[in-house]
Image 1 (cartoon, helix red, strand yellow):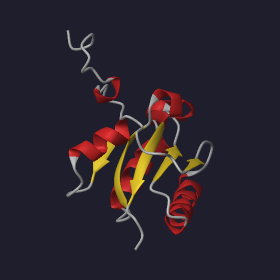
Image 2 (tube, rainbow, N blue to C red; image 1 turned 135 degrees about the vertical axis):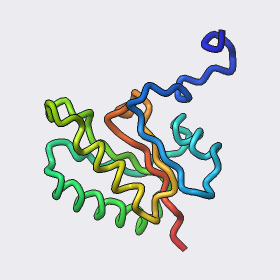
Image 3 (tube, rainbow, N blue to C red; image 1 turned 180 degrees about the vertical axis):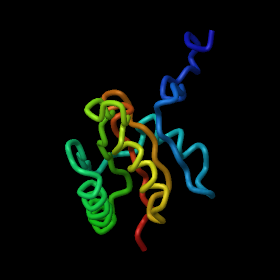
Image 4 (cartoon, rainbow, N blue to C red; image 1 turned 30 degrees about the vertical axis):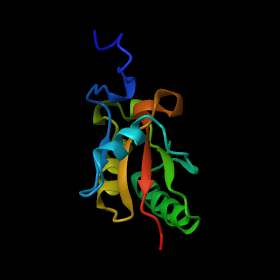
Length: 129
């Protein structure tokens, strides 16, 4: 019944493959807007094919530049790990870990399917003073 009601929002469904995080103090409504793609994405980084070390360095540089350029929301494409065989999505797990450790990341979540789905995340960045 919920799926055919006017209040159904596909972005609110969880399949277990999604990443999502919000820093303490960030309202749930902000994460909901992020999951629905309601923030303008100002830049994107594609980590496909990178080693873990190269991806970590690229991500740090990208986020530094995004804040310098006063971007509020960015997309990070980590892939779904289909090339990682039995190890699972290595970069996806690393990105999840790295973003949680950064003070400049307020929230992040898996992207909408048109933007990479569970192979990418939207990250909401703290505004620079």
